[in-house]
Amino acid sequence: MSVENTQAQMRKGILEFCILSIIEKKESYPSEILEKLKDAKMIVVEGTLYPLLTRLKNMELLSYRWEESTSGPPRKYFQLTPAGKVFLDELKITWNELNNAINTIINN
Image (cartoon, rainbow, N blue to C red; front, side):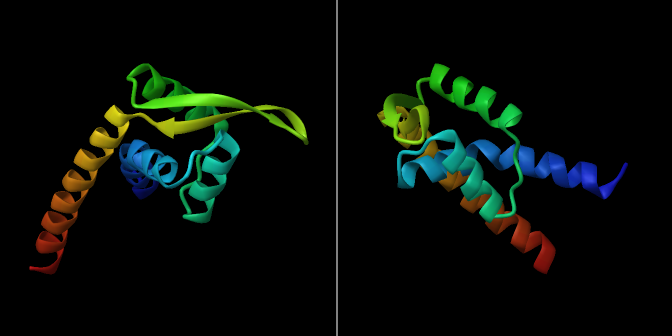
């Protein structure tokens, strides 16, 4: 087993959390989400993002609206639903608990 495989699995495990966190700050279209993930060194391809956005929408955690674009086809902007906000808040609690537990293990 390579370290790269484990690193990829770790990143994949927190991808939903990262996407929801980006959308919480500002409704976003997929290209913006990909750019913010890239800026944070979380390299994700469209083929991974789009099915995940669809799944989150089908779970009623996200909704979207279409907006005309001056530089191409209309854009689909995603925003958190009230259920998505509750879900994200729960993920933040879990993240903080996991982060504390891991830091305790690493540092002791």
